Length: 408
Image (cartoon, rainbow, N blue to C red; front, side, top):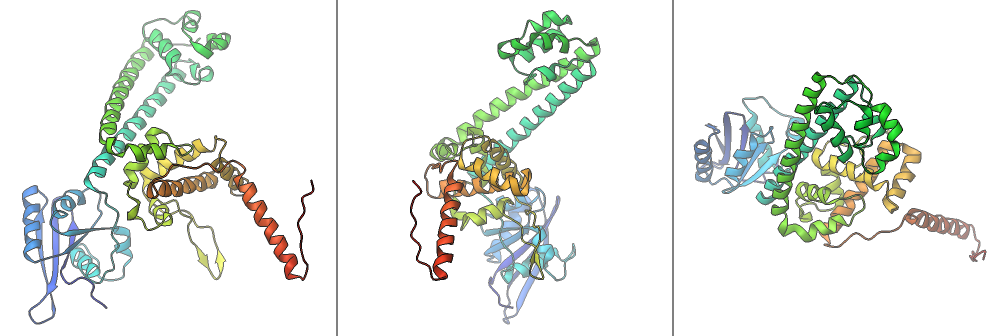
């Protein structure tokens, strides 16, 4: 098999140790390899880097095992070219693969160019990712607290969620704080409603009649306190994200022009894709990496149902939320959702819209342009013209001369 890299190394990364195998040309022309084991402390990783530099290694490959690869990758990328391999792809390669021989097998695959490198963004984007993902985790924690709040109210027989759209809005918060303070009179609680909720006062009074006890007040106190902490934490992290994103403000404004994409969604998209579309040769490569491309399953000439592959779960979740928001707009994306939904159902239609949005994100960032709306009737115009051309071509192939005239 053709050798692509002369001096390379494979690393088998664990929590406490890193086993390294170096493959370099020998004095007699044959391949020489050396295996050593290092620790994962900062001093040991520097020793590993010096050892690789001493062997004049140019490329190092390692598997993406949990988060243990990160400190190793970050130390070595300063001295050699690092390849982060998908562990699933390496496991599919036929050959000797045991825990003892992992590093040797990775080095041999790298030597012959059989390992594809995973996308690792530059340090500024990695720091931005940490912030946006942490903020996303905080938002999910807050959503869980709201669900606990619902559970406590249902246990107390308080049907506030049946009347109020948002029980943690201004009116809901005022009612909850009054309940914690000891007020259980439904008429008094209903008068705390504000805005549109005041139109539902009779139903609200009935919903606020329950069996609210001191036990429920204690639980609500803890839940509301935790929610206030999470709100403050989300606000602080959002401020840090805005500070990091100051150099990327033009790109954020262009992403914000896409239907269904809010400011926070644009920040997530920029953090997950890196913003530099030169990493992905085409929009199809980006969609495949995100796990939003159609699956391929063909056997005996028959196309079978192919589900989407696994990809960047953070980017996929963000795009699905944005796609669901775009379906409620008067745009071409909403029209695409309704076209696909009639034939394939809701879930596949949302995936199709998410895929279309990711393609839009690719060209918006690659060409540094804003989104241009095609209109809700875009597909009707596009396919009507296509059907007309097809009919004309069919008649011309049968020997007819076709002249189209408007009915008007």
